[in-house]
Length: 597
Image (tube, rainbow, N blue to C red; front, side, top):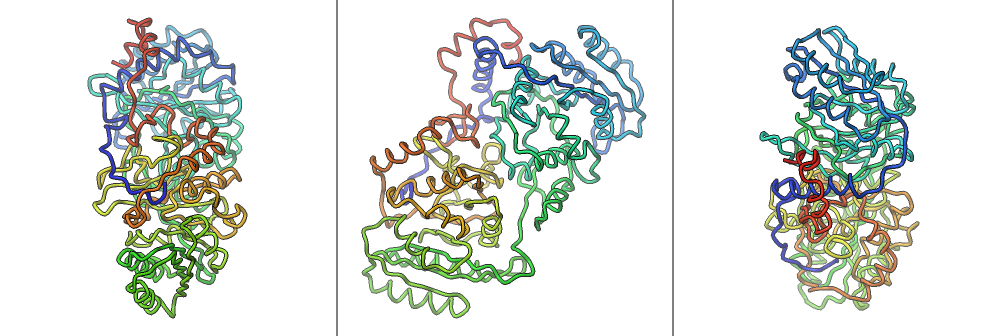
């Protein structure tokens, strides 16, 4: 809710931070899935492609593949609940007695004719090995495996079923701890094109239809980059039919290989987007900073700031906007129109401050003071001001927002100007550095909530949600950028909602029109969360919002894994319920129970 000061509650350990809880939860969930869930519908046959690199010197710094890892991967394949698979094992770099024994022992269980073995010379690049396996597979869909990727028994069935209506399907994963127990779950969001640029978050397992793979140019080596990331970026440029199976279907015994930025840089160049690429805040992630259009007139931005007195906050906000618009060595200036909406100020200091802001920002920037003494209605105030504003980009800002990282305004505007983006918001932090906003999640602690609100300064949050630019369902109206064209097409904010849920409603209406909503993590601002307005909250408004968007809330936020807790903002797991516990007891001693330690 807007203008609702809240003391952030302490966060619980997130899904990756409580190993004991994850073991209980994973055991219960896997048992329920295998024993209670309906069998997946039949889908295309999958060719599982495993490349075993035996070279002692590898470009990624790793040693030769471990026979124990290969045996784990193969054992998991031959015990799949679905028999609609083939397996291609390609050995690069000669032979090894221990490896031969591991492969022979595992594949002795495989049905006849399902497995093909290949040997390639030591000079073969792994990407070329996967490309050769793809070319001779003959199956309509493929899954890449590395040694140590251990599929859950129903992984083939679940991924194949997801491909009935998709070209790409992926599941969740976790890691093996030193003691062999599963830990560090990666419970992923649904399809997020923006997140895929920053991080190959689809991870393992991923199934792809061969047709779109071939149409995109197939598997290729990427000097200075990750061939798999490159392939996923190219394929998803041709199709948006990407399905997510929100269950842990793969256990990984090895960390993802380190990569360079070439795959991301190539994708941006291919798409005609001007941006820089730098190492990201987490391993194997990238930070993309988009630039404003070059070779044209300066972008015009209208910043709309409703206020009532609170001169200290307003001064900091106005000066921060002026400084951001001026640009600097790394960021170009923008034409700023500062629209100050005075909603009934009475203090003499306010009039003086308005004169000061006008003098400080002008004549380079235009300052407009618009008096509107109607009862406070956030939507109505912003709609009326936007109707008179001149900017191509509208930036709605609360008067209690200030300062920010260098270039924050330019980063928001560059995102807002993209044709497929409807709204974009920054990271917001409290004055003490704790996180206030990094995206709104539907159904979180009510109708909608700020995920990871209260996260300590310097922490990335679960799966980097607090520090990675990504698609979200909504951003807060405390600072939101949108193109004027989009704002007019959507009819502005819904004044019937008054104060609450306008930002979420606007973003959901944009998404309903096929536009994306983003959090730009590189733009950070301080948000005091409007102490001058007091607390809001209206049951009638909440009911009106739920009447409109209740189905979306119940369906679940696509950018927040359904298995994460919705009780609070922690991105944590909840204890398994009684029904799940009963399923676990009925499978005591099974492979499912043992697989999670």
